[in-house]
Length: 164
Image 1 (cartoon, helix red, strand yellow):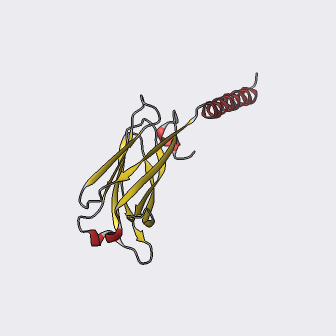
Image 2 (image 1 turned 30 degrees about the horizontal axis):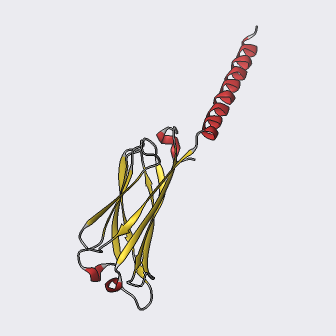
Image 3 (image 1 turned 90 degrees about the horizontal axis):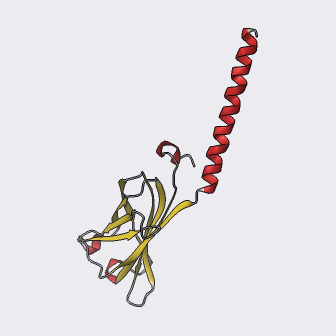
C-alpha cells in the first residue's frame, strides 16, 4: 500500500469513528430526560431585611435548588429585591425567577423577574427590579409569591451544557 492510500484509509477510519461518537452522544441526549425543578412559595408576612428561603427538587432523593429572597429593610426602598440561587445539582441549570406582590384583596400590585444561569454546585446572585401597578406601592403589599423554574440536561459535561 502506498503512503497516500494509507493516509486516506486513516482519514476514513477517523471520520467513521467521529460520526459514531456523535451519533452516540446525540442518542444519549435524546434518551436522557431534561432536569426540571420548580421552586416557589409565599413571602408572608412581608418583612424587609429578612432572607426568605425556598427549596425545590425534582424527586425526593435528588439534591435541591435553593432560592433566597430579601427585600430592603426600608419598605419605601422596595424598588429591587436581592435573590440568590444555589444549585446543589450535579448539572448546570437555566431558569426564570418571578416575584409577584399582592394587596389585602389578593390583587396583583407589583412584580419583578429575572433570568439565572447557575453552574453545577454553585450559586449566583441577582437583583430584581420591582415595578408597581399605578396607584399601588410597597405600602399596599401584604404578601408576595415566588415562582422559579429551572431546566438543564442531566449527564451533559459541564463545558458543553451551555451549548444545548
